[in-house]
Amino acid sequence: MRVQDKAWRDFVKWCAARSLGSLPAHPWTVAAYARTLEARHRHLAIVKRVKAIARAHLLSGLAPPDKHPLVKRTLRMIRMRRRHRLAALFRAQDFLGPAAGGAAPAPAGKRGRKRGLRASPRLVSRRP
Image (cartoon, rainbow, N blue to C red; front, side):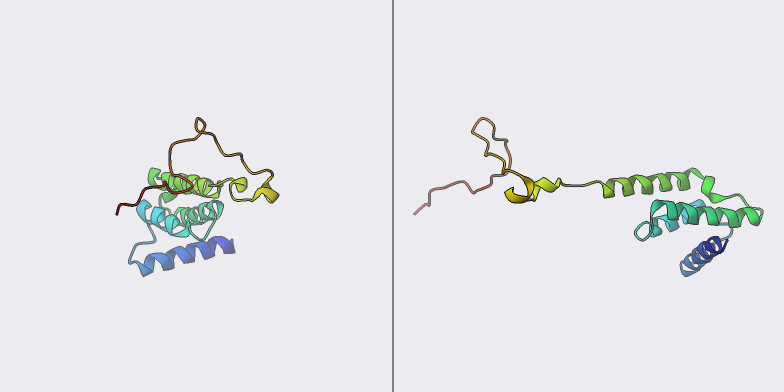
């Protein structure tokens, strides 16, 4: 109960700082609030805060904003972004040396070489 009250008070303070209405809250306001929480909180904590906002609306006899498609889509987007952010961008063996990651990969021959950036600069004759 106290966590829900704190979540509601935080939302009211956030709205007051931006001159937005907290009760009834527009779905865009709730979605924007969820986006600001994304950097500091996990997805589940954000969902709980949005549910606390919806609870305050229900207790006041208003429609809960968490059922609006904009808020649902925003929460889904936060979840997907969090999932992709936590996915490894690089493999560990790409950065580990031969001692830690096993044997060093053999250099590819002329036929096995992929096109792209070179490991060493191309030798160019100097013009006089």
